[in-house]
Length: 363
Image (spheres, rainbow, N blue to C red):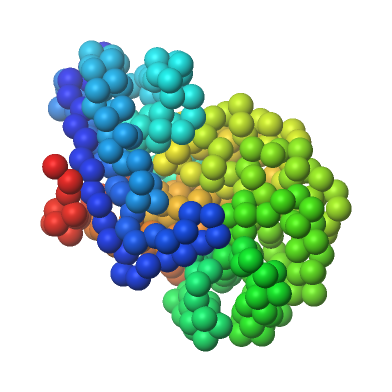
């Protein structure tokens, strides 16, 4: 039995190099990083983590420290999936989804780190991936950029090796969104995949109108046009328009994902292992996606998701997120020949540079 003897958490408040803006969350000045270390009686240890957009990190850490960690001490750390399910039900009454899913995710990722280290395999290989690569696009949080800033941003992304780009939309006047979309398409040319993300800022009716207005610009996918809980609303948008739909970053339980697959008529699903019950949850979503014939993509934490996407036969696109968690790791994301490359070190492939993080720790 691989008994869990100790669980420790740390919270970091990490400033962004520039303030970032989107339609619903408003201004981002920093992100919160919650890191969890799990230690087993046999001397094994692993590191997991989750993150927020700058709010709620103390609540996530409190749930880990005060509720989940005490309940996991003495349990068998090798039973990763069983522990994941135990945690979900242990805190279900007060924490279904939301903060609970963030907390469970960090713990789950740490246990997967131990599992892969003990197997002496990198995550992508443990999951039987055939190659350590996947497609990658840069996702900007750029709704307040001027046209000049916006076109320079997408040009820089392509120059840095990404083979697709995504921008935010959701201006009060959609004419401004169209102007931004036209400028980006002109800058990147006709062949580069180009996604847009409304951060659920539109009604179903407005989303349908907007999607039709964007058709001349060959949008690769329309992300979160409306509330992620309105699964039927997504289906209505899909029925009335031509542009493929994507969402998933705001779904935190398997039941929510099942509703999305059943009702929303998505072409792309975007689970985030930081908030969908960790690697265990992410893999369950990937399995659902295969059943429904939907491409599995990712949201955020590209330094981890590159290994997960590389392992999947229905792999879609890795999002290179504007929260640069990987800048605080030993190995930032690697691109080669237009593809993201997963790390070969045993474990989840994410090792934090503690010296870089230390100035931002909250005690």
